[in-house]
Length: 361
Image 1 (spheres, one colour):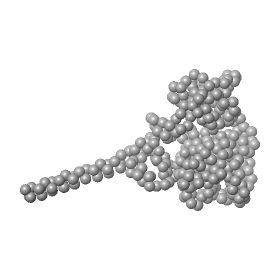
Image 2 (cartoon, rainbow, N blue to C red):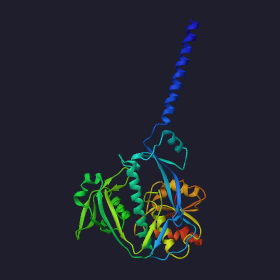
Image 3 (cartoon, helix red, strand yellow):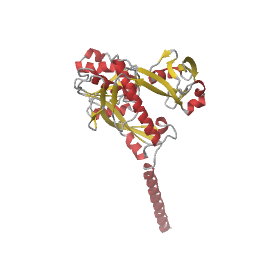
Image 4 (cartoon, rainbow, N blue to C red):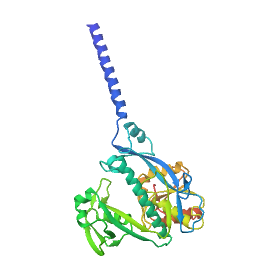
């Protein structure tokens, strides 16, 4: 009996040991399984008044330009995850212990079924659009005249399901929302969100006639309301502004492109030699809109030598407790305020800077 009991006990230990190895194998295997998440981490920064691959990022033909110094860096975020790459469980575990990274469900970043090619095309189109909007915002700030049209190009499947294509047509020119004149995407987005799920009234020009139409809105997973209209901005500028930047996409470089253009077209140095970075979309009327990944952008800017950062006012809540040491973050709502802030730092205007709202505290 005693010997049998010992054998039985040894057998149990073997079973337990094998079970433990099996569990360990399952745990290790889980670490390499792809996850349905996207990971955001700090990316490189680019000086809009400097060069990329030996070529000026901003060049102007047909207007006098001036020497600049310091830096007005646009900031970027690396996005890892489907459909462009794979985030594994091990990557997520590391990200949980790294304050400079964030994890988000894939569907909040990319619509279901989006392909890698579609992401690249979308990023490229958004970058091209942001450059045109930046030129428009810069010219508006400099009181230079230009012509603009905001017209309907297509509809999302959600908009078609809601019946938006029954009240709007491709090539309709959108001139007002809820009775207020709009000059860009941000103005329309603001009117749609204020409608809070109710139809929004859009004024459009069609075949020479001006029409008021009620357009359905719908709520997306990101908490914002949409009308699902793909819009095209068409501009006619009085001179040529060319922006060259390789392998960078998305709409969030608009503010820093705008400041770079203004600095290039005006005498004197906007920065006074200081190292600035920032982010934010822009409308032609100069309004600065919020973007994604701002904690990563601030960390990336600080790590790469920027001393000051311009953040959209609406992103300040995303920075609470996440601003690294060695960089000052200033919230802005429009291009004029952004330029004034940069110049206030140059002039050491403490009264102006003290009057700005706090960001990230």
